[in-house]
Image (cartoon, rainbow, N blue to C red; front, top):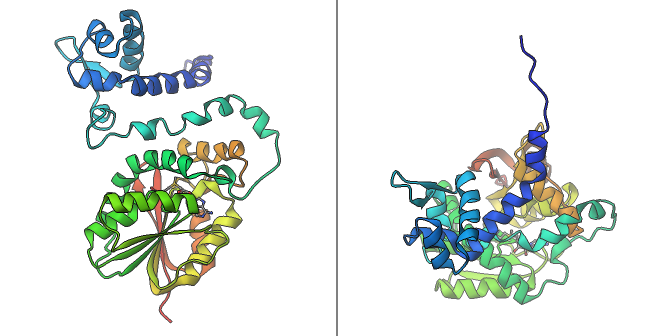
Length: 335
Ligand SMILES: C[S@@+](CC[C@H](N)C(=O)[O-])C[C@H]1O[C@@H](n2cnc3c(N)ncnc32)[C@H](O)[C@@H]1O
């Protein structure tokens, strides 16, 4: 029996992982995939479309080819991989470029991760302390570009036909509320988010013409009074931003304002219970060291625990976006 030879290849590839991120982000920023979609099929044509040298076009396209972001058709001409064509071609309805660039502002800070790991100060709101409307607008350009697709999936998966009032905690652009309101004209929804974000949510609500159904309220869900009279609460994509204690508290606060018989959906990046993966939730948790918050990665079992401790019944975990997001749901008992 031959023993598996131990070498450094895996470790080297991990150490150079940030070069891959940089290549993808640069390709999005410079418009490589848009150019290829419009017909640029070789380095010379890409160079012309992007106004860069042919050598740099060749370098970038070669890396993207090895990362399977583009491939070569039988003709030998470059074409985008299916996901790239759908999500990274600017001007198309599925364009999610802002989301791919969402983490880029943390680039330099991740370079100093060791220093952040040595810090011990924590602020409850972490990266959101002192948030401005302009920063919230930029942030939610990115969350909106990915959130509308997730919201459509939520509305397909969850039967809201007998529900009347949705509380969208940390609702951001309002993607979930807007989509629910459009799918169910009888539904009212409240986006509850930090005051600067509520300003931005109102812009998206107006853009979609759902002002009669969807409102935005500014507040901190860890501390401020939450709107009552809702029969659905949604909290999507802010799980790793807070400690176990705080998430448990927010779920309890939501439980307290929900109507009896109401349901809560927590959509978040969760770890498997043995904490062996996926990588995404672990990285979002690690990023909170940089943001100086209390946040970390939570497991499915942690979330079930928060729901049960709050008083929710029939608590179940559903795969929401495979490998990325789970949806934990529980029902507040009828009196
Ligand atoms: C990643 S975004 C998700 C937005 C939206 N739920 C979605 O899935 O598209 C997280 C949101 O949670 C909000 N948030 C975080 N902490 C909050 C708090 N303490 N009170 C209210 N909103 C909060 C942020 O302002 C941000 O809009």
